[in-house]
Image (tube, rainbow, N blue to C red; front, top):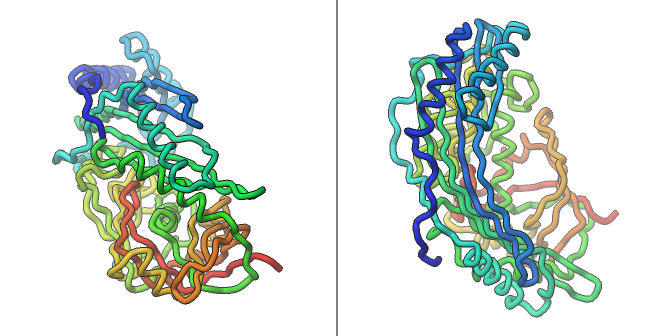
Length: 451
């Protein structure tokens, strides 16, 4: 990527910390027994190019302060974008009024002060990039041009886009905890359209990173998007059957996204999860192990503390197929009669261990005959029952080789059976999100297509 001058800096932590201190002090003066405040500032640039022309350019600059107060077992929250003394006073007063008007809840309150983070390692999350608008447009154009050059049937585009964001978030509470997290996020992607007769297919690809040097080359991204679009032309449906299904890494991580939702505190205390009460039981194939690793440099989900200031920890959530941990904040933990796990706000890098010495290509051969799913549509996942049914497209495989593209099909099963039916996890780990895993081969799913 092109080296550019340093990016405009965000406000210094020293400029923001007094605002949070004033908010907490004001809450105490208003009679609150405890309080917490969260302040975030961010700025970014988003550029979209379509058919070689800049379609949109957006500059974003945001800031927001939210204050939560506690009057015993009553709580109220209010927010503002105005950081003046007067605005802070009004915001705290509003939060206090909400709390005093509300009902009591024995589970509300700050997390235990003994659990607050005290160690703040450098996670290498902040790498400002002074990307000028003209340069951003050229990068997006190069990306889209590579898609057109990848195959003569790629003649249209939904566009190529580049997004940059740098942010500083500060959290403080009346335990005396204060923490800051400065980060950058960059992404570059393309959606190419291949045309053959009356048929049209879209192919997507993107790259995301904390540092601009970790982004894929724009031409490689565009070429991948174009090739994916062209490869989907000529798709056909399948007769209804049961067969092995292979999820490439970028699709496979969604399976573990459903797992994360199912072991999260809100779903558990509401008994709205098929994994409620399953702690210590076998819920995956015995070859599956997944861990939370919150201190990976430059990773999407790295953090030293959660949304309540509680220290994050390396944890094993799936141990040889056994569910060995939930994801709890202090409120959900109290509802369940447990202790917070330091996961208010979710998981901090779920890393799924590979079980197989190859990636998608090798797993395709291993599968022999079955379906590769490249795209999923719809929201047909019920985390209460585990029922899973989604529209899909991809490729039918015979004798370890892709035979033809398929579309207009539905894959169906139940997450409990799917998790236990994982035959292999590849080593082609996708590191673009908070879930890091390779391609996943399932032993069987129902595929519904033509009658």
